[in-house]
Length: 477
Image (cartoon, rainbow, N blue to C red):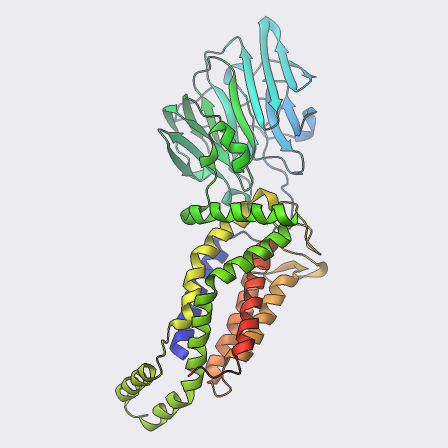
């Protein structure tokens, strides 16, 4: 019994510790004071891989703004480009900056005007740049067609570690897509790529599917994607990472949920089905948790029965330890015979944990990136993509933050009750202490996870607790 619990505990500890390291810290502040470039364009022209891109960072408020459709734009008349974009419903600007900047225009002053769904820049000598917005599709038309390159976007590498953790640049060639963290981007030129761009937690920017010659440029502060040859209008997708929006442009491969991507995509489809029935993402997650529990119930049942058998033969194991206390090999041999006699598998209780492992990892990725959950409320939860944050406390809880999150505490309570039910009264004090520690540790790990993920885990544990309580009085030997 102790060995099985130790193995399960150790495996879960390693797993949770890894996720704690790679998962975000509490999201308690808005994105603030990102390094920006002003109406003064980059100091350098289009750069060779051996050079560096340099940007100036004065006050952002000096630049004018415009609203077109579902997009709020901060733009620079000097150079004629889109400094920042915000999509309606998302308070913070996207991480994709300086869209449409051309090094050859760094000192050109444009007059800007909004005409319907277009932001039009005009300058002397017949120069004209038109940014046309159609929902999430941006078309950039430059007249006359420039001989030099154009920046599709730059990515600020000085943003917080939390922001960087969810960012990724990518390019696709001959159907194969390559992904990198922005900080690992290398200066390079690529020919005839299908599409290229970047994504953050919820949104992405990408050239629509076609054939492009591109160049990645990186400095200590930025990573940028340049389009080398411009022979006509350039179409760019800027919007949420959803299959519905990406598929019409052949960009659905941008969506990626890690090693268990296929499981993640299936989860998304199931969540959409439940949402169509309930019109609530919170209820959809609960139904999803119930469904997964039902699918895995046969394994849960066998696991719980194995745990009950281990409890019921524990007195016999203790007798063997007392009887052969001076002969460890004899204890091991007799214990194995005892297991065979009662058909007990010491590791049987760990099976659901390993079956849940790929599901949990895929769900972790989905719920951290699922656009539908951003801003979705449920009961007291204001945003399912964030911790539930019932009350803001007048003080900080060490390592946890300033909010009282109820769901992780509920997971702790359920875990402690499970330990009470499943641990024999004759169990060693070390075993009981380990169970209590694990229940508390799990709640701490989940404390700043998105409430959607914690809600799923709570429902799973609550259902398991109900089943364990039901069979706790039954004899399974």
